[in-house]
Image 1: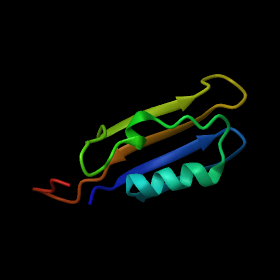
Image 2: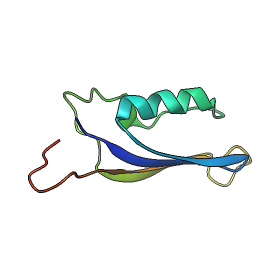
Image 3: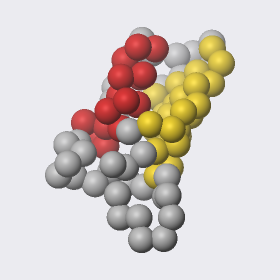
Image 4: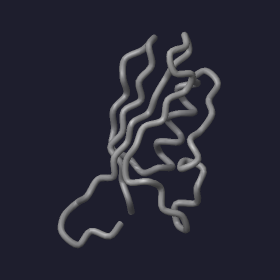
Length: 83
């Protein structure tokens, strides 16, 4: 099972940092009730069929008062890890 280390940042709260699967990250994004929650396309992929990008950044409303972001990177457990 693939895990990602990620950070959700928002101007009005402390950053949230965790290492989870993509479905768990999806749950956290919804629990935070961020403004205008527009999910990045890689979060809506079927994790069993599609491969999300290994790392990246998504920003909602860049520069606006409701700005929030999520930064992620795939966690590699060791040589030969194909998950």
